[in-house]
Length: 512
Ligand SMILES: Cc1cc2nc3c(=O)[nH]c(=O)nc-3n(C[C@H](O)[C@H](O)[C@H](O)COP(=O)(O)OP(=O)(O)OC[C@H]3O[C@@H](n4cnc5c(N)ncnc54)[C@H](O)[C@@H]3O)c2cc1C
Image (tube, rainbow, N blue to C red; front, side, top):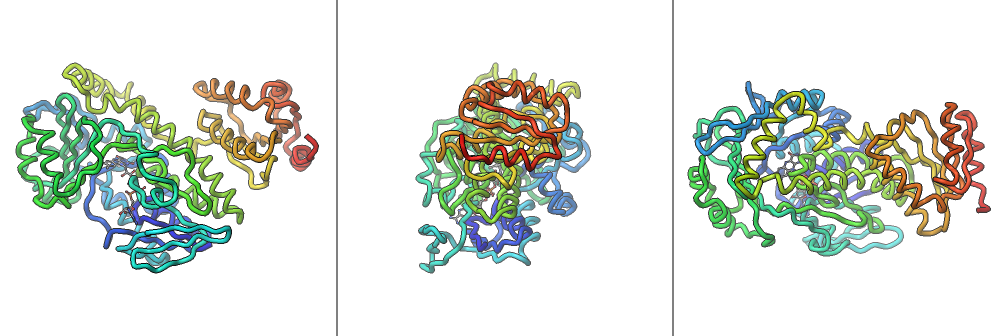
């Protein structure tokens, strides 16, 4: 298929790479005139790291790593710059099984670009102005007035997605403000800061500064609590930041003095999540921040942009039924994004505490997580595993209409129940009951945290699932089948693993 991708950022370039691998013909359009060199540092781990390994780009990324100097870490300093709590990057790496890198956004983008530039048409300096869909294709109008026809359109154009605006509706419909603004810019590296990323917090505002791969520059990150005042134009950015950080201690006066003269060199944005009911509309689909921005508080936007791209292309590579592929992509990825959005939302208030007491409490928590015994909490908070490895439920390509089949491998988690429920809900839009086949290849049980989801699932669907076929090879799976009716289905039957065809036949029988 010929697929247009709007946005040559992380999600767009990764989608292009994987679509190419699956035999499609992607074309990328990027609004910026060239690869963007502005940027900020990001933590890279979990799903994104997994995808980067599968792309074979880990070595290239490793060369650009930041936080590599001896003793690197994240420090929370007092107004004199003395560290009150310090989290060593080596400890973070250890918790994440060594699969962690500190990267500049522009370096990650550049490595992705290098991976696709020879195989994919990438057009810089253009954007879509109109989208029209028919049953057969999607037609886009570009800024120069040209129209072009594609099989699918992927909106990978970031938090303020143009495609989302054109096809799904205005940003306000989907924006969920978390109470902060952020700003980033580079300053000359004249501060004699140690190797650590130093952060200084006062109630409701925080400044961080860290060294990057640019020897002569430090990157900064400002965060402050305020009401949502929408987009800040370039010429208003400096004043906005100065007003929010006036009278702040530590190195704030010098960092403010070193602010670039041109507002175009200053990134200012709201810390806003994008929450949508669906990421699909006909032949148009969203990926990355455009679909489900989680914000920097989740620490995983880049990672999940790569994860979403990988799954989208994988699904489009597995079937010619593009509608099914887009649905399965959404069912697999959306629950994962929503879980991380929920965690980020819950953590948002503590992110930059609003009171003196809150700031002190944050120091205590930071000190605690520096102890190895507690560092696992970090991984839990940020859901540090790759969902490509942990998701237990996998839709089988033979699923069609009211007959759905899933392979189950691993331990069922809450997100697996959501994936399953989205599949069922989709089918139940055109039928009153469904038949379900669960192929238990290596079911390892249910995670404790998912027991409620399991109960809710049974309550919601036990009358909607007419036939449930459980395909397995273990004795206890036969018992599970016996207990499944009436709790999960009207009728449940067990089939031996070598009898899977008969199981499909049983669930495919039409009279319900
Ligand atoms: C300060 C900060 C810190 C962060 N820290 C982390 C972190 O530690 N870990 C992490 O994983 N994530 C982090 N993130 C989030 C992460 O950067 C994003 O989630 C990620 O970049 C999303 O990728 P994307 O491709 O969807 O969007 P982007 O990377 O924003 O790419 C979107 C692309 O679309 C282009 N575009 C926009 N409009 C148009 C248009 N009309 N037409 C064509 N192209 C267009 C843009 O120019 C851009 O190239 C952080 C974000 C910020 C701001």
